[in-house]
Image 1 (cartoon, rainbow, N blue to C red):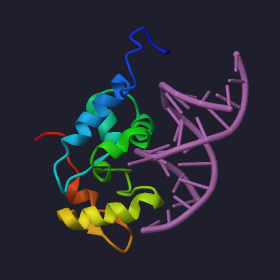
Image 2 (cartoon, rainbow, N blue to C red):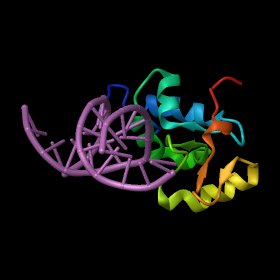
Image 3 (cartoon, protein in one colour):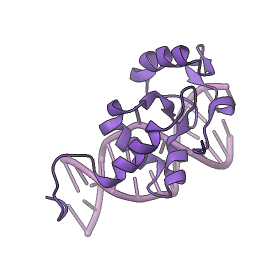
Length: 108
DNA sequence: ATAATGACGTCGG
DNA sequence: TCCGACGCCATTA
């Protein structure tokens, strides 16, 4: 066990913080990995990426993109479908969202 | 203890 | 705009 709590197989505390935040990103809005780390004042963009890689499937993962408004090659297809479905400002040609108009600051 | 590895980010050319 | 070099930092080898 890595920690004394050793409690079950649920996501580590940090992962839960990230997942909670991702869950509240409104439809047609996104946050970058770096935005999330900054908002939580915890971890770094890389850390957030690691959380998404491990538990992303449990949340609206397509609303978390890199600073270029993109996701890894393999997820672009599925993400694109969601973007179109919720009206996300999306550049089909470059396969990336327009951060200038859909970036969310974390405030409702 | 050292090195490689990532759903990353900034900067310079 | 695109791309490579670096910096970053927990995790894994």
